[in-house]
Length: 203
Image (tube, helix red, strand yellow):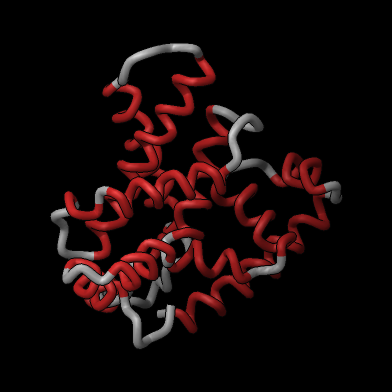
């Protein structure tokens, strides 16, 4: 997203009825939702569900029901998107488990899991020298991180997701990536350096 198309500006235009701005607004969260989908699908349905399909379903539902959104900020918008994703994922779970009827408790559990994953995205990557007011003036850290990860080389992105976001020990990361433990440790360090550099340009 360019500096001339900030979320609040797009949200204002979308609320005014601009379909084009609504599309741009929702699409700006595609990488964020895709990362959350991967983390949650890995717990529940892998490899039955494609994260991109879940994201597309979420964005279509958000577009269809945008008139019901009552929030005023980006943080409220991403929370609303996570709730939609939780409902979509609950539908997929019911399909694969062969159950019928809406399960509110399942949706609430999935929404809580997605919230927790979203909070995890910003942990360890925020500049420790930032003041609370500086952090508050930026875009949502979890969204920025997802966008930055999408810009990394694939192996850099994978080692960060496996190690930091999915919590695997280096030995398991090495097995998953077909590398030695020493190799993935070095790759992890290089990936972190590049990721933090990207985040520094996106504040």
